[in-house]
Image (tube, rainbow, N blue to C red):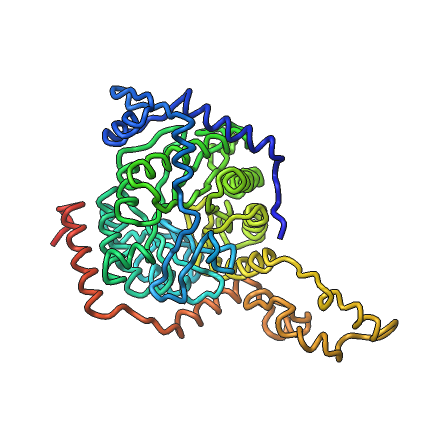
Length: 485
């Protein structure tokens, strides 16, 4: 399928050149002594007192060349492996994920927002595994788990029952080391974990043009441990980025290229996914909006830039909304937030279940988003045009005033020609009324309950669970001693 182009090639080159100028002229704050030393030794101008570095354009371009063109995100079970890029790429683009890192949940039984807990997290992992169009699993941030070690213990909790690839949080370099230990437990060795890493995580820059010490520690530890890292820039247009789409994308791109330079200089040929998370400020309220059309335009433009200029694997935040509940606003916003970047060619799209400026998640919304993901995947498959599909001979045979219901051409295709839904309603109005006039949200709640009630959890074997528990206890003790017992 032809990719959607937001701008022409000349404009893509201008954005790329603007990013390089920002890195060379403005520079970045990098609060990490080791990274500053590494960049200085590589020829960059460094001010150790101000912790500021000015990147050489040639250096940036050389590190781009080191990024692998193929990345494997391994499932616990091999049938759920995701291969991105290269000649072996899996055929199910775009790959999709549930949301990640959210504390609040919209309780579908009370319709009130509250802090999520481990029971919600369990249902979330079950849904991520059971829904057919969610390819891999994020994590929640349940409030009944100690915050200091929640990234590690949350991943450990999910790994016990998750069979797909797991995308986790990582607060610092030590956390990444523990995630790597989890991966080795799942695979049996460091070497096997590097071949099919079962865990990845994201690391975010601080816009504008700032990298924290913990953030850089995470990046370096990812490379050292062969853990795929999603290098994430999340600028807010009008607040932490220019109030222009092109300016926002130039800034976002500069930050990701800088993070990649540190990753590749410290550990060459490390796996990296170019992770796009712009938003825009509402000047009337001061809120950061995630469902605005300008945001999806920035995301789609970033995809075009990353693909055409660098050949990077990309990830965008698609099915999201600023709405507080599962309603028509949510449906509208998550549709346009998803379609533009997908048509632009993104490899991955995440966020299933998110609401309320990415602050809240909803399990029924996640069920509905599974349908949206199916539509996106079907769209990307495009339209096959050949003699059989054109069916000129069939039309000629049927002739004027005929119908195609009984012909062989229809019989060969009728099972697969129409994308079937589990939640959306196509009944005639009489049947719809007889069945209680159910709306989509109600059907999604019923499907959610059916999935959770009937899902057969395949837990890790007891030996691996014991190893995970040992790692969790060590993490709790080292990261936050007061919480260890």
